[in-house]
Image (cartoon, rainbow, N blue to C red; front, side):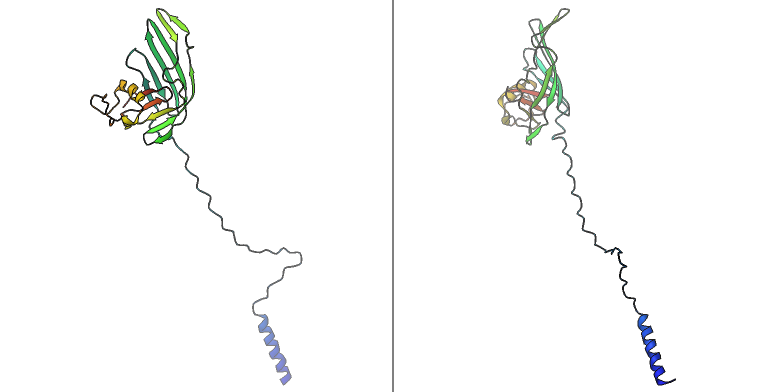
Length: 215
């Protein structure tokens, strides 16, 4: 083979080897959309939901309370449900007549004042009998009355068992003594260290106190 032919053959082989390398990037055809790979943004985790608020003090209600003086034969009975609704009855016998009142209503949710005291208000109250109305049934004479102990109950304190007598209003202590709710042998000592063994309700504006019926 001639020298010139060899040179042409070598050039052809060199060009062929170069073409077998990595293929060049192919440009997009005219009008073809160019797709770019975009890294996904960091997605923040959703905020954790706070647990729903439960009852302030599950052990306060439901509970039965009584308001009485221990003299005169009258009393107000109060049944308070877990949601703050209540029913009650006031009853008093005097000179052959019986004063009576059936009532119902709602208290607001208790708000904590300190470890042994809560506060609430009277939201609504309705009574069945009209005050002063007389009803005769056989030899019985009934007269409509009002729920004694809940008049003007704009604010009511709830005292939990363990409350010290010296920290409680004197008027509440006086009413509570009817039921001997203290942690002493005779139940009626006046030591300031005596503590409640039951729950108490105190009508602040009227100075009247209810005591729970179970220890």
